[in-house]
Length: 116
Length: 114
Image (cartoon, rainbow over all chains, first blue to last red; front, side):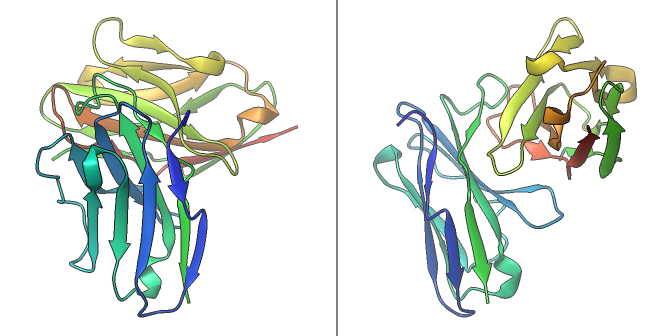
């Protein structure tokens, strides 16, 4: 596609359930990022994938969060045993290479997660 | 680790007023600097970026930003705002040459009154 595609765009889930959020980056982009934007907060880095390198997971807030990227393309962010504080917009982004300073990062429209 | 501060959480201006949004960062080395904009109901878009060279950077829609290294600042400016500039603006930084993630400020909500 022309841009970064995320699904679902909206998800309401019950506390304690698991959720999966999907990101399809721009074709040819080797770097993929997940960010979280909570109400009234700035953007919070979660995880970064670059090619076949080990992902940078330093931003994941707890072990309930995990992400994978299959075949160097599509990524899935999984939140297990969701809590109300997980409610946020989860943004995926991609860029051509792994150095944000050298390449523009393009963001998807986000997945709005509400935990009730 | 780097950090970014945006001191203005909400700015309200009338059309044709001049705009300056503050951004200060904390990092001891060379940085790349960015401003992103998020219009209501839309995704983040890049407004402008600074890597090196002329510290005055011009972006889309008449925006510009000036990198002042001595002040660790990268303020966003526009001489005359329009109602369509109503959006949330995010400043971001990453260490130059780093493959790591951008660090974002908390954002500034700009409301332009018609």
